[in-house]
Every structure is written in structure tokens, then in C-alpha cells.
Image (cartoon, rainbow over the protein chains, first blue to last red):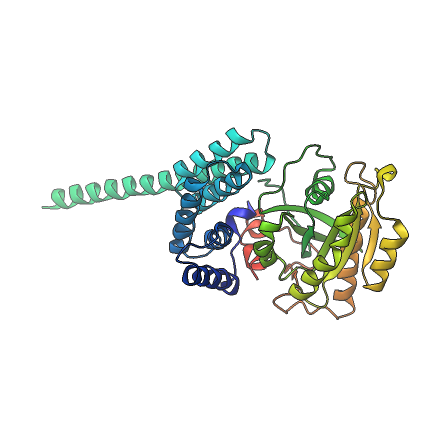
Length: 153
Length: 217
């Protein structure tokens, strides 16, 4: 799913970072929610994991302070799910996409993202199993080697 | 994720832009799924769609970024314009305000894409002729003055939807053929697959693999 794999270019990321920093400097440290959201959205599209983590942190702060505005809430939830999926933290990603689907059960974009998270999760689980399997084989080989060596003695 | 064999010679990147509620996502959905979505909620950020078409015997994969029309997304959706080979600017023929904002969308499209980007103007909701607020002639004149292709279309009935997407691709393909579009330029919005005639089937992994490299620029 492209929303999970596209990357922001550095110049755009910097543009929104500068805007965010300017607002912090010029407005007693309290930037506009919209500016924070724009910066956070770009951060979740970064190639750097540390940026993605920073992005979801901002989004979580926005979500926590967003009590009534449903339209904004859905944006935060959606990009939180995207961010956590990119971080491969599928449990949290699924929690957020479920909250969004509770808000808007028929939202096709959310449904598709939920599906994509699920399939990503399964892929990762398979990879994990393959690695664990590999580990077992390696351990088995070591035991066999050890036994062979013992026999030799 | 479908796993069928892919063979296409080119990838073209498109963007769809325009005011909120003009039917951008519905046009995309009609084009990719051949279905009309009634009651479609406002797009969150951006959506992506894809379809393989044929122009002059060449298979072309369209990668289409559909952007949210709400003002608060606009600053960020601009970051998707770069590297678009085609830009579809949509207005709603029953709402004049969406037509009045066209010059602002056009300015964005011109400033943020390359000179070869094909810009296509679509007046959506042509099925609602009784509620028409913008005449065909007026919009056609605007399109001509600005060197844009133009059709009125309906995401609901499907009228002219296919045509708009295909015409755009045809124009892009012409620019490739006559050499005015440099495929090696990072922001041409066009990628050529190594198998020019599609003789060899690409594995789905190759085809779907890392297309962000084409989208992120």
C-alpha cells in the first residue's frame, strides 16, 4: 500500500520543520495545531525511523488535546496507524485504525489501511518464523557437530 | 495485493487536485473500479490508485495520487505534485466557487510540476445539468486560454472519465515520442521499464517492488 511506503523529500520535511520551529520561537512556544499536524504528517513519511517516532509522538499529543473535533480526530488516528505500521508496531497501529473505524465504520480508506496493516503483520510474522526456524536449524547443526566431535574423541 | 503477471512499458505518475467535494476520489474510483461511490467521506490526506492502460499498443501503468481538497491538507499535498507527468484539475459544474478557485490550483500545478506536465481540466458532475452553475463555453474558454485540455465528465455515469485519463496519457506518450519529455530527468514523472515491448514478463516483485523511488521525487 503506497501510503505506507512513499517517502517525503528532505526539502519538504525541512520546510515544515522550519515553520514549526518558527512558530515555537514566535508564539510563546505554542505552535498552531495545523502546523504541528503538517510537520507530523511529513515526519511519518520520513525514511528515518527516529523521524517517524517523533511524528507519532506529535500526533498523539494532538489526539490527546482534541476533544470534540471529529474531522481532525480522524486525520490523527489515520496517520497514527500509518506511522506505527511504518515502525512495525502493529499492535498499536491496529488499535488506532480500529478507533478510526469505530468513528467511521464505512470509511473505505480506513478499511483499506486496516487490511494493509494485517497483511504487513502477517508478512513480518512469517519472516520472524523463518528466522526462528533458521535459528533452530543452526542450533541443531551445532548439537550434531558437538556429538560428532565427541564421538571422534 | 494481486499477484498476476505485470507487463507494461512505462509508469506515468498523475495527481488529482481541486476543491473539496468536487468528486476527485469518485472520479478515481470510477476510473480504477468502474463503479460510482455514493456518500464518499472526505479524503484523509492522500489516496492512491493504479490501473494499466494501453496507448498506441504500449501498456502503461498509471500511478495516481488523489489529494484531499480540504484547505488544511493543501500545504502537505503539494509535496505530492513533484514528478507528476499528468495533473487533473477538477471543479464541480454545479458550484461556481470551485470553478473560481481554478487559477489557484493551476498556479500550484504549474509551479510545482515540470513544464512538460500535461494538465487536464475536468468539470465533474455533468449528470447534474439542471443544477449547472458554470457553462461549458466559459470553462472551455478558460482551458483554451491556459493551454489545458478540457472535458466535462461524470463520476456517477462514467461519462468522459475514461477519456480524460486516457487522453492525458496519450499526450504524455506523444511528448516521449517527439523527445520533448526527457525520461532521464528525475522529475519527468515517467519511468520506462527495462522490457520496452513487454516481451518479458516482470515478476510482481519487480513491478510492485520499490516504486517509492519514483514517487518520492
